[in-house]
Image (cartoon, rainbow, N blue to C red; front, top):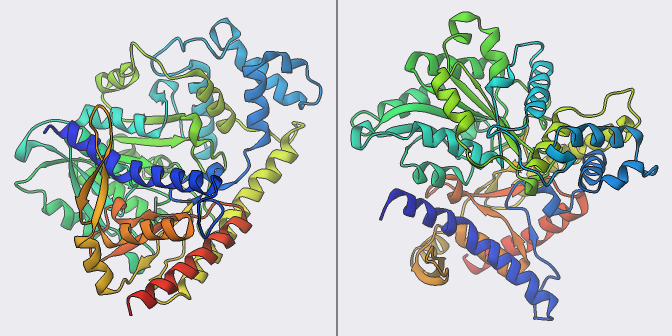
Length: 490
């Protein structure tokens, strides 16, 4: 079996079954099946709209007028929303969102808006539209870079230093392109901090196994909620410079730093403030997307990457990588709105600011509430989140349940031309925990084993960007299930 086939199995195996189980549970409830819950609540992924959060009005107003231009004359829409829609239609071929994008790397106007956003964010650090590539989602954007880096076999196979825990789709993406995952452990007892000694330890393990070429960083951490300070970012940059590693910086949740005393610092800003010794040398690719906390437009599938210090030939490849196709137009228009929001003199500014503040306040309060609640449950320990949309509590599960998970008959989603479930023996105990929680209480969480955590470090992943009432319902159901579980396995 090829690496690509194995990667496909991994993707399907970790995501499809539980998604389908959640959908089936909702359908069965709707048909009157005997369930102790009315509906399934899915907070396993960073999809706030799925959890019930409302979209940003200005974004939807602009997109609505772009999709249906007659709304440009609709006086009930704010004037600045209609003006923005008119401007964006003007950059679309034939003034239609249904037209193809003229370039493989994205609409030039949107690329320019992205660079202007980056320069505002980074206090004037220069950004060039030629360094921007837009694609249909952060996964595809990252895949383009990984595909370019894939090379060699055995000892020469490309390795990527990867945090443990990491985003739950990342291991499969690395496998799909035949890259070796080189794990470095985040320090849970220090709030999931990145540790320089651990990076050096991980690098030493690659000798004779692979050729490390990149380090992947998620800041704010997905799924840990850790936020790096300037000192930590500088340490990683120096490490990458010394070891000749490309920095892959996932900064999707840069808009959601809420921990006291924490600030949102981009890797690019810190890199350039460290002086030319580093700013002219370190290769950096940073990623951002519509799935950010404040936007939450995950289903629109729009993202961009900015590449710094890459060889011109490499940059040309990345900008042409989607050819002869091109990124879809509507997500690019949403990206433009994300990076170029209303300003104080605009009619929509007050409503926009209130909605963004509401999302951030909800996120901050929910993260604190959920962490405190879970820490009061026996057998659960949760580190406080400082940013992002997840918390990642540890489960101390009864030994009997761990053994049951190893031998229990489960079902696995195949990747055949006609997918079906087949029997599979043994799962991780945290996956069994999540399966039973879904079946008994209708709450879908993510198993920490999907994020690279291994026995005996069992965890669960929970998106806390949800309406407060929904979060309380989740916590109540989780409380009931968890106590029953402990009674079942005394």
